[in-house]
Length: 131
Image (cartoon, rainbow, N blue to C red):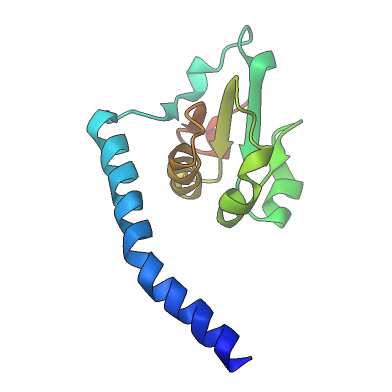
């Protein structure tokens, strides 16, 4: 057991700098091309003609989602984005929301670094969107 634990620890220590370097490269690449409004959508931009093609994802806690989630939205808490990224559609517009756009912004950055370039944040959060 100790041998296995030591091996895992050693592998983690030796692999961590490489993974951190790769992550830094990915983040740098994203920031090189991201503008101030990159990844943000205003509620007014979600017009009736595009709403049918939008997938909403509520990144708040389960209680908040149950209380006032957008009808038809998926629920993936922001801390679960990495583990559940495969549930995000690869095409079409995916709009993440929370109460303030703080949690959804974090989730959006993670999703984009994982290859989901179609993910946007709802500016103003849930309260700003009234379908």
